[in-house]
Amino acid sequence: MMDKELKYYHRINSAFIGRKIIEVYYEELDYKTDSEFWEHSTDIHSVDMNVIFRLDNNELIQIKWDNEFYCYGIGFEKLNEINIREGIKTIKLTENKNWAKLIGKEISEIIVLWDISEGITKEYKNNRVIKSEKTITKLPQTWQIEFGVEKIWVSALEIKENGTNSYWADHLTILFNNSEQEKYQLIKNASTQQRLIANSGF
Image 1: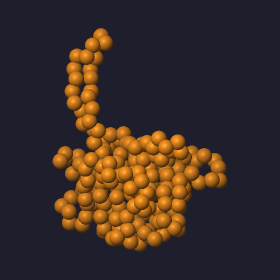
Image 2: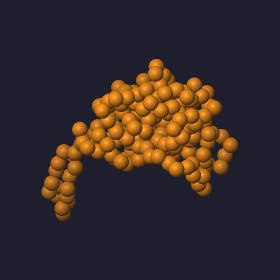
Image 3: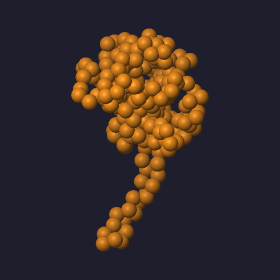
Image 4: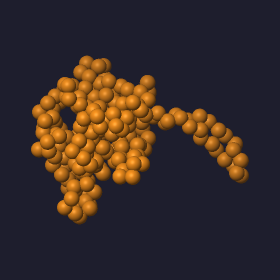
């Protein structure tokens, strides 16, 4: 296991495990319309930018798509405050029915679902291949966040109306039930998994 992965697990463990969510916000591109683009369905929320949790220790943590490992995987950072920015719409979701049932419940476990892609990188000179090597790209595609028996999935996935869904996307999708997770095969297609619980050593 790479040192970079170990640090990632340690950060997740220390920030989330054993904590409770008390507020939820989405950051969306502001399309200047009254309709809410994030509500893909009753059980799926589709978010352009970020999901922000205020935890019971009053820390604000932003879950986002980023390129810490490769474009695009699940990353996060602590915030000092929620910044209201031009062109970005900040929406409070704490009372949304999907989130309301999880507010105040302890995060007992997070499973990081990694995706791995293998390929060949070629170096050219004068239209001739002068070097060819096997490359492996690995990124954290999805987090499975558990609150005791209840689970949600936050994935760098963009569900498109034409059916050409985009994984490794500059987008977040939150799935609130297992049947939706199975439909998009987040667990089935994961190359590896890493389980993070209290006292897991990270």
